Image (tube, rainbow, N blue to C red; front, top):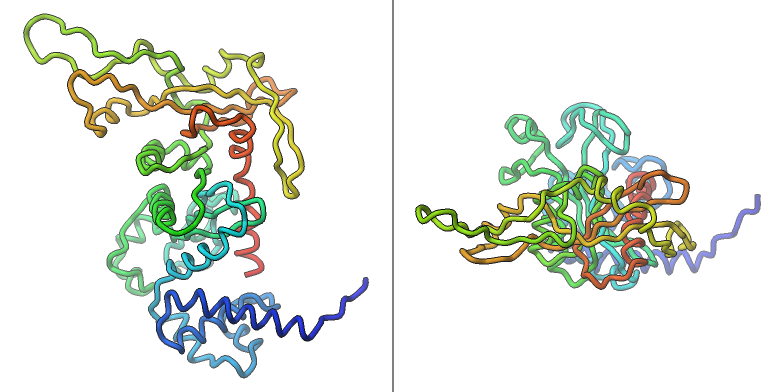
Amino acid sequence: MAVMAVDADAVVVVKERLEAFAGEVLSAAMNRPVQRGNGGLYLRGLLEQGARKSLEPMVSRLGGEADYQSMQQFVADSSWDPALVVKAVAERVAPEIDVEAWVLDDTGFPKDGKDSPGVKRQYSGTLGKTGNCQIGVSVHAVGARGTVPLGWALYLPEDWCADQQRRRKAKVPAEVGFRTKPELGVDLVERAAGWDVPKAPVLGDHAYGENTWLRDRLDRAGCEYVLSVGPTTKVFEQGTAFAVPPRKGKDGRAPWRPQPDRTPEPIGELVSRLGADTTQTVSFRDGPDGEPVTSRFIFARVHAAHGWRDDQRRSGWREGAEVPPREEWLIAEWPDGHDQPTDYWISNLPADTMPDRLARLARMRWKMELDYKQLKGEL
């Protein structure tokens, strides 16, 4: 195997660029020179060669530049806001990658013991089973030229939040309470929406797409989404009429809530009724190298069926109003050779969105996997 020589001048240039970058982004959150210095050294330690990323071997690799006690204090007790660092990185990198989507997801970090914040036996998609781990919720901007994190949040299970002794030992701040993964995810999306980064539709798997509160919250916040759902998710088909029924008799209050002229149905049943003859063959770029992909899809306009009466109340519907639940896209991929669709999505993108864009966004979530692999492995 040929071994390429390392250009010493190139190494110096890369080191200088890394130090300049670290100084720029760390200064957003760290106002003390010692903090910024240790932060830059810690970043270098993460990026340099070496299988172990714990502090002692990192300091050893950094040689005389790093002091173990000072670095230990920086890692364990130094107070600074990591969100400001994420913001600085995102605002610098996101404009360079041609952002196409924001991906909301979570991942497991296998952990031994029970003292690390949030660690317990819980299901992890990373493990593919229940195991001892921490769960992190994240939002990443995904583009044609790369990806960049927009936010991370540690999921603290309810029993962790209620255990004051464990909280004190793990230094969990008093203001941190129990939040579900969808609640953590929406907070990350809304926080990033206030930054100077390109906005894009939010993508997510079943755990987020089937959470109707999350879809409502994103829609009310003006965020577009293409979220994966299962075949049992119910919708009203297009053409459903919503009208206030006539008053029955003279006594009592007159009806004011619009009623649908039919019942909602699972999207799996609706798509099966539409049939494979209604599919469209769509080509779009997907895959690690952006290679062309062709598949069959059904695109149908539907009305969100979940909690539609609650939606009326939340939206301030008044007597006599005739506003139906919001209209959305139902997307179903039905590949050749399959007797039924393989995947379903719900999206609030505009009605004139082109099929190839809908299909591409629906299939784009996989790009997160490389981020997770690199962040948890190489770093």
